[in-house]
Image (cartoon, rainbow, N blue to C red; front, side, top):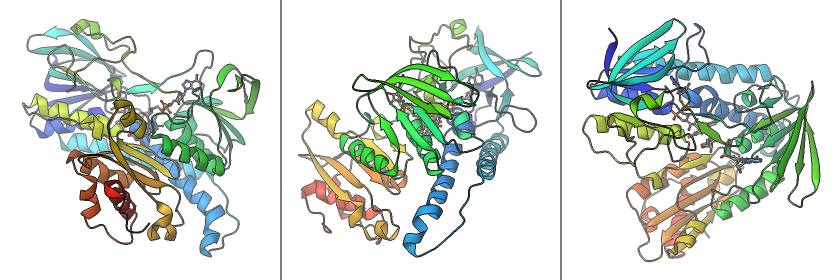
Length: 479
Ligand code: FAD
Ligand code: NAI
């Protein structure tokens, strides 16, 4: 007799594990299946998905280490602090990162126990519809287990997209997994794709000492960001020594015992070659829908491999939901989490809602880039009348004190009503500063609301306030 649950979640990434916890909080019996290969010390699949195992969390741990290293080597002297003999212990850096991953993934296991969520260890797939729900099987190292569920939440996430003819071995040619595990700093590092991963991990290894060259197919840099932010970022990254080539066409990639050679055509059409010790391929991610046997319940992945859902994450089959990277929308951990809560609450009969326009984006480079809402180019394309307001970190005492005065905050407000339509930041602390903008937009605040609210002094948040005042009617006080 198979075990019965109210809700079975497939995938224990940030979408799945949060959905499972919220469903348990709402009183449902819940199980969550996880099949990933990142085994814990007992050889069991580790919870936490891409985010905790090979994504957000390890990459940010490495980011922090590399920033400390760069500071110690290059910037502490500006504060009158003289250090000498700075050296790098890569093995220790990686061990610290791995310990954080262990702590975080173990934390999810603890939360599952606390909320009485059953963990199904193995690959889950649909068997078919049964009375009052769905039958699933979970194939793990100890055999196959059958379970039934009234509701199924598919949260199977995504994996790195690879390029034809460029096999990834995660030693010389790496995706996000190998790129966070180099045993030593590559002298020359090549990166294909100047997207979020390319810029974040490229910056990490540059700070640790690599000579980094990024090859990007598109002629424009950071096309999803506001153009003025992308322009500023390109300027700053170039100054830092990140070599970014736009408009390239990748040709043959050859590997030898010790390195990788990439032939490509540059933007002017000239043939070029890049020889490097390691190559990171970061050209986007593809949804995990293989092996789910969706057809057994009357579903199928669309032509791009995603599961089609409506604005509330319902699939075309009542009782089956899909969330996170495996469905439309940005591939972000917090978006997956928000959708997990949304679905659990709908199963409980509640009427939650997500405003996708208010989901913030952050690129964890140094300085950070963050935005929420619409870009200036999008507002122009929509023909919407708007007022921009901008304020630089260079005019903020706290940023100067931190020796981090690069960048600016830009607020875009509706020309007639002053409602905030978008906020764009490049600068120190952008990942935290953007939260104020997201709250303001959720509450449909006017730029003047932010301008009139007391902000602590001296703090980086004053830059947001000044940019908002500037958007309202050019009345920034410290400019
Ligand atoms: P995932 O986290 O991919 O989890 C899905 C889980 O489902 C996996 O563990 C998988 O093993 C499991 N699974 C799949 N199929 C089955 C099956 N049939 N049976 C059982 N289990 C299955 N986002 C941010 O917001 N901020 C960041 O800073 C950030 N940094 C990132 C850095 C890197 C290097 C990468 C690669 C990604 C980063 N992301 C970041 C993106 C973020 O990791 C994803 O958006 C997020 O993990 C998606 O969550 P998810 O739950 O939808 O899927
Ligand atoms: P991406 O979509 O951000 O960028 C991929 C880049 O590769 C694009 O600029 C694209 O034009 C380029 N590209 C595609 N094919 C190419 C080719 N053949 N040759 C050269 N360039 C090519 O994808 P990335 O960086 O792999 O990250 C995947 C996703 O993971 C992100 O979109 C994001 O959703 C998530 N992520 C989020 C982070 C965050 O929130 N801070 C950090 C890292 C990843």
